[in-house]
Length: 403
Image 1 (spheres, rainbow, N blue to C red):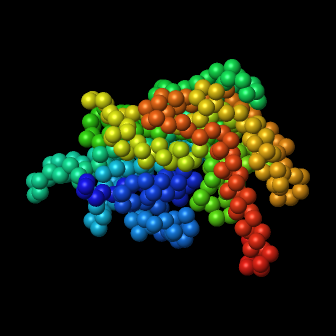
Image 2: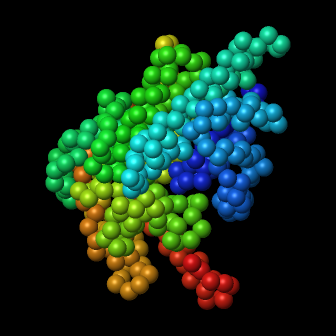
Image 3: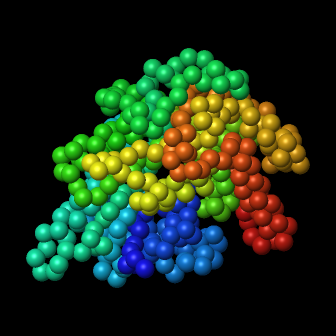
């Protein structure tokens, strides 16, 4: 049996991060050390029934880091004395698209500084273990692998976004396909046409920073970049239907289904009025990929390789068509479709841009096929319906006001 170890995860209060946390507890033997920014975030996590009833809930601990971008912010957390050594890290926390007067300070610098701070602390941590003279070197005390969440947005040149969107399901309407290794270079600079372009620049800059760091410092750990498009599926961290509707990519999806507004999520208007990239992944598949990427027997590195890029998206080069979500909802949730308040109107438009993340190589390497668009939509809308019905039942029973 291998020595006990700890998995360090950031971003666990988000849509993707919470599911990665659940996946890690379910499928790995590791203790989990989850990073949060404020102590007040702990109760909302620990009282979530998906987490509080988990058989390995007792293996979860928290550490508070108020600002991930500060140099040395991770130093003490990576050497937590009351837990087994941290051997692997999954870093998800990063700014999402949002309106701003200064994208450099609110989106790009935080993405870059958070990544650089983590990589630096991990390298310092391993170097201290290697050079320690008071105790023998112990490889089990070193950090072996770091998983970084990135995006399809980092693979697509801005010039490939303009042009008419398409609602056709023909593969020929989706000509721009990108493998997870086709990272844009050089990093775009301000001014940016939209929050989405600034977000893309932040992801490109973080990837460039990672590459430069590995080249300059040759750390002993390996890095896996996980490239993701729109992430759809059941939001198990959400407590209310409104939360399930407005968090992450589900907000874009369900906003389009309900209101004909594809910018209805927490992130507001991302300035991407021409439509959405025709590429998506089920949140459970993306969480699984983050965790399986830790396994050196499943995701292997070449002799001199220090960084790899994996992709998670469904339907190969065909991608998805957002308009299909309405057909799926009408077919799978007919009793929830209607014009009255609280129903799924399914009368809006969700345009599809001809941009696709091609994850077939990742699927082939790992021997999997990522879930299709229908399962993603059913999961997301099903969770919203579930929470809505729970709220309606509480209202009927008079158990308090529901927001």
